[in-house]
Structure formats: structure tokens, C-alpha cells
Length: 404
Figure 1 (cartoon, rainbow, N blue to C red):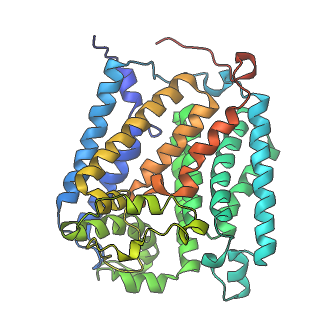
Figure 2 (cartoon, one colour):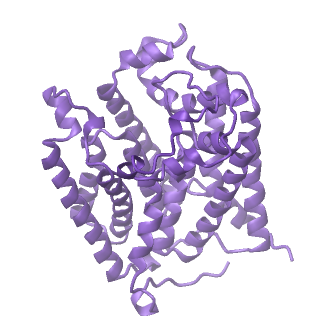
Figure 3 (cartoon, rainbow, N blue to C red):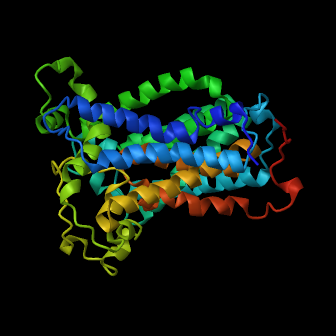
């Protein structure tokens, strides 16, 4: 039996929705690639275009089929977070993870005798690459992303100046570590949580996005330097020098796609998930469990060695080919859509945070394969710990059910 209610389908296209998360970023990438504002960009069309366009269609088809055959009321509830009870256990767990993270990060700072931003300020020869203890640093990145997102939810429910200041302090940590990926990731996860509760705040988040992009450019300038970027990208003569700073954004949006698109016709898949598994092995164990990635000749070459990110699709394509990469993204889209429907209907902190992680992974699929990035995906394994002891309704999260 078919069930069609237009309002519920429209909800899937909200800025916090799964269709927006995949389709809009990739449209921007395809347009940016065709513009070819720099000589490093090769605007040739390959089978990779068909994979991306195919996944745009698959996202629409999956969303329509799931919502039609398994209907749920997704219409926005005006009372929002006011009717969501965040248990004391969730609060204690969030603060517990934050205390552990901050303590371990302080230990790292003492052990490393400083942190990346300080090294840059004092002119130390060490860089952000030299910071952190192997494996521990990756675990701390996962704990930071998860605990900061959970604390953001707690702040939305119990707003106060003290909590806001603490949240702003947490957001400065990626700046001190000169880590753009963590900064963008945590901002996307928190933005997703906020937009689920208040979709009308999109204008505020547009300005926040502008600020984050400005910080992205700032970190890029102090990490690598604008002159070095311009030398690599070789912008077209009609691009004025006053706009060269914006090339940081253009480069990180378009060059990952450009890398795969330029080489996809020459790739010979390995036939085993070497690339995907390798990124899930902690760095301290890679020496003992070496997959000999360097010895595998798949025929893939970067357009430029300094631009070494290549979208969600590269690892699957190198392992099993373009069709497998397409099918894997379809699976991710199904997982994302079902997680969104659950988050929208329950409004439970656990469900919202889980969806926000997937939301961030899909948006950043234009940049990297974070589904197989251990510091990011490990959040999905830590998150269930926050539910321990919450089996009883009175000790869990209370939510009034709304009928559409």
C-alpha cells in the first residue's frame, strides 16, 4: 500500500536532510570542475561523472521508496527540543568523555612540549604533522568530535552563558592543533544537530559557515602558505590576485574529484579491500599488520602530489572498481536516510548524534572517505556506550509522540 504525504518528502530535502547532504555538495563539485579556474583542473568527463550522477539518482530513489513503503511522520515538530528529555546519565557520560579527552590532550601537550599553533607562533621547526602520540591522537580526535557534539545538544536544551563559553572553547581546540578536517567535521555535526531542532536558523548557519571558511583559509595560509598553493594550482590569468585566498576552498572542493576523474580510466582494481582496510588499522599496528599497500600497482596517480585527497570513491574504486564504489555509496545513502528518519521521529540525543556523524561523512564525501577514517567512524562505536544503563523508560530520554 502506497503512502504519500508531500510534507514528509519535503523534509528529506531540508538543509539537515540526507538528500541535501549528498546532492548539493556534489553539484557544487561538478560545476567547479567544469569551470576549471586553475590549470591543474582537467575538466574532461569520464565514467566518474556517471557514478556521481547515478548516486544522485539513487539517493532520490532510495529516499522515495523507503518513505513510501515504510512511511513515517517527518514533519517538523514546532516544540522541538523543549519536549526532549536528556537524561542525567547522558549528561554524566558526556562530561565524563570530555574530562577524559581534555586530560589526555593536556598530557599530549606536555609530552610534545607544545602544540602546533604555538610552534608556528614561536617559529619552531616542528609542524602539525609532528603532533600527537600514535593511535592515542586518533582516539582523542574521535572522542573530541563525539563529546563536543553531545555537549552541543546538552547546551541547546540547557542554554547558559557558561555552557556557551565552554562550547566556544571546545571549538578553538582544532585551531590550536591546526587541524582543518576536525574543525570542519565538528562544525558540520553540531550544525546538523541544531538544524534538526530549528530549521529556520539556516541564515545564522550561513554566516557561521562563512566564518568557518575564513578560518579554513587562515589555517591553510599558516600551515602551507598561499604562495605555495598558487604555485601548485596555477590559477587562470583572469582570476585576480585579491581572490587567490579563496583558492583554498576551491582546491579542497574540486581537486579531490579531479584526482579520481583524471585517473579512473587507467585504474586496475586490486580485487581485495586493501585500501579500505588499511585506513581502519591503528597506526601503531600497521607495522605488524602491513598490507604492503606500496607494492600494489593499481595504476592510480595523483594529478599533483601535494593535492593528495581524492573523495569517498577512491578507496572503493582502487579495491573493486567503479560499480562497487557506486553500490557502496548506495548502502551508505540507505543507512543515512534510515538514520535521519529515526532521528526526526524520536528526537532522541543518541539518534540525533548518530545521524549527525553520518551526515558529516556524506557531506565530506566530496573530500575524503571518512567512512573508513578510524578517528571519525570510531564515533559510531563509542556512541552506544552512552546508552548503557538506559533501558528503562524513566531513566531514558522521554519524547512525546506526534501524529501527522
